[in-house]
Length: 116
Image (cartoon, rainbow, N blue to C red; front, side, top):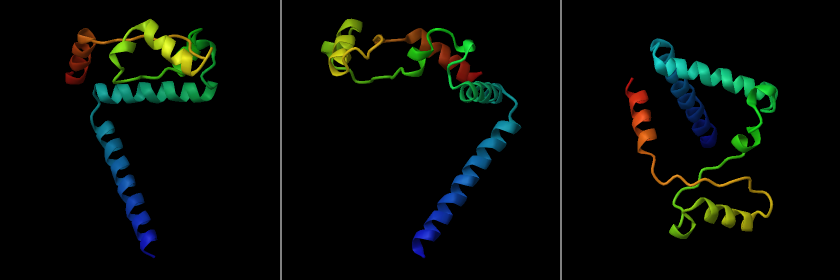
């Protein structure tokens, strides 16, 4: 019986957490709400088409299967070095590798968007 009570509490807590998040989005018709609506629209489009429709363009595979890697060893901190490493692990399966070490312009733009 103890496991069922824990599950019930967990379900109720998650429901309340989700409900408060939705209420916050609905009550604040700001950029957060606009971004959420845009996300839902894109997500439904992606799920409906399976991510392969004409709307997504020719680079869809790269976008769909991209991964972010953090804490890259200094020897691999170049596009070619990282590509060679992953191509060694997964021969012929790597499309490309791009290393971005610092992005202050991107961080400044993101901070402006979040403050707005």
